[in-house]
Length: 348
Image (tube, rainbow, N blue to C red; front, side, top):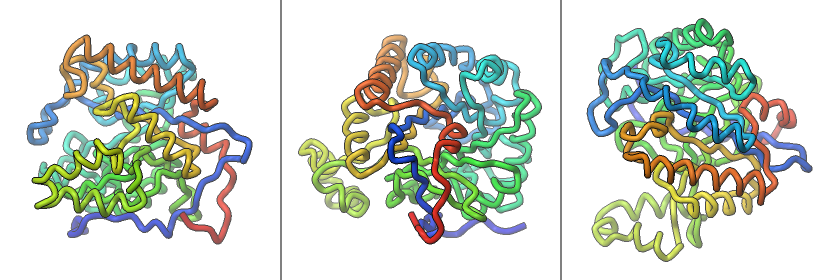
């Protein structure tokens, strides 16, 4: 069995080819829900934390999606795929053509349970090749068995794509990957470094057959051109003690943002979208975790009032993107059908 990587994973961007929409195509919003069990995010990872009762509340989000014409992709993990409370609420939505269902690998609750449960191993791409591949295979088969369709879209738990992930995806018939967290460095507890990764979609893998759709994120502000380096520096002593990150943010000089209602306000989402549009980005991934639809399951939604505000941010952003910006909502698989074929000799 091969050993996990000893250094943080940093993707080789030169192996990716830009994925382009036709020139007259409107901007695209891809909405992805990390659909998973409830667990205490501040506690150690626990194989026994597999409750999916929050899936009873998934309709609160889907009602908003249906009203505004948003077609989400629910990437589901093993506890959701193997418990009726988890998968059943999604099957009717899927069968009605109102969503796509993909795969989301949380290693610590996915068989085979052969690795040590720890922070480093919570990123699936850090696992030995055989273990990551087998966990993903069992998850894929579980989804196909319950939902009646084999998933073709993947998003690694904790954005944990690794050096062997592409080969596993190709082997198991996946077409789309939503794992990168553009602009974010997760190496603090062993995760990958996406800080210099573009928010643009790209073709990659053998024959450029896989489509990468990053979680939209990045740096905005006057200093955004050197965002990754400045952000890393500002979070080290003595700059951190001097509260340099907060000063830069208040001045509007440098902010690191993600296109998510979890921890970000509507103004953040609009600023990020405007900045990315100005750089030529036309495909956006908006994401959040399904347990946020039940108060008390995540730090982002602790009460019914929080949930109202949370869904309000989603509504206002969707109305902004689909109305004011003239965008459209597509699933990852629908987006793939609209893209121009990869051009040889180009790189991301």
